[in-house]
Length: 624
Image (tube, rainbow, N blue to C red; front, side):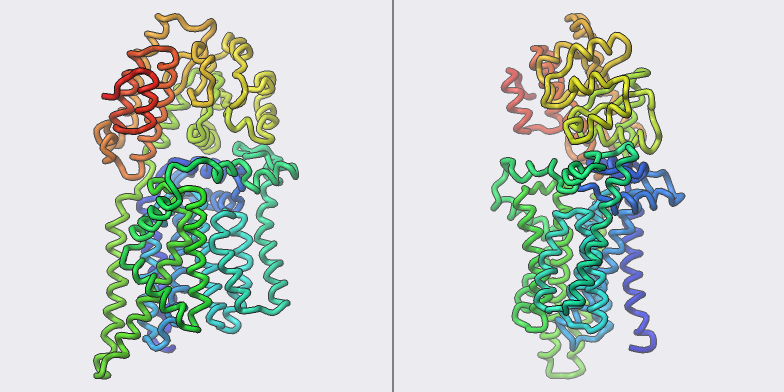
């Protein structure tokens, strides 16, 4: 292709990248965010080892992005996801253009460029992709790795000579990196890709080169023991021994997730996943994907590529059904990103086949070209639709950093803080790693102390607390009250209320702010009354504090789910957890007025919640 048309492929790819990146950057989280994002901010800032399987590539790229002088460190790490997701869209464009050439080789090349851009942005501007592009996580990067493998797989299916060979070798390297980034999601597209490769029967030499490159990608895991030996702030599983490295890489801590009893049945999960896919990429694209699957299975030149894409969809849905699915949980939707990418590619192929068929029906040659521009306009119309549909819903995380300040800054000097809730732990990790906040506070996570190497790491960091750590002060073990009482005589001791904290310890605790103060001897009724009054006022001050620079967050809006889109779930979850553990605490101590007050607050946030209702019934309380 010569002349102006020759510039279309790079121009279209750049357009996809810039459209996606500007959208992501405009809505990117300005601070640490919710769920696992604070942990990744902390791990990137300190070159640490986040939760299994260690995620070495996201951490290294996050550290690189943290060096870019734009905003604070958390915002810089969040932008790494924006770059990765925008690149995923650009690469998906190239894959779509190649696939459209297979599906309808008679259509103009210019149409393929335009349609490919529309297909790529239908994915990039979906809520699932956009929601992961604005926060520090692994899913945007994994979407990029999937897009590269998809491009390589389609090129191999098309038998594009030397180009397909180069892409095959690149895909092998990326396969290793994908396994080192998130191996469960990687399997959803690598297994179908392997079947695609076997169908094309590459030479033995090509196979051996590909295996070497895949192992080179997997070598990213070597970062874990090297960095873990330096005892960074974030050091999940302390994987600098062979046994602990295997524990971390195998994600053994999460194996129980596939064996727990699910709230919904597999059929209900499958139905929710199907509805989520339709909502994310539009029902029009989903219907076109079914047509593309039908046409592709009937055309010999399309069968391998169609089989690969169908396999990605089946594997993505199957894994999510296996481990359960909650459409309101962003990470559950993120598992579907490769499947969503495969759906839009199949949808584009279906539209191309339909357009080609309509063009061939025209008797007048001058009118045979009308279906192509109409179809291209249809795809391009998805861009503003997706922006309007998902843009407001993905703005995220203006309150998480303020909540972390509330949880850490107000503690008395030299506090010993025992926590158990993973989100609290991740937020405090971020404050410690990024801002070096409150170095005088000793923080021990009772849940994480059950993991391999955690006790040794804690003893090294806090040698004066070795006796307490060895007691042990860990979830699932009796709380070492005697050691805590001894420490409480010389320094403040605060404990986070949690469902894994045995009830016998409650009489030693007085709720105070985000935590409960350990008191010795056990608190008197008068002390409890004063603490409960303070706790009631403090809960109201917390909401006001979170709302101080964010007027959109008010108790009424939180109760109705109308606060800032990215913050509403995070703030609601934090407040509900705060209320839930206090409700259990007050019920056990038979402090009924305090328990009823907590129940009233929680009920305003989640009226009708079954767990709250059951706990209230057990306590002999009545929901409002």
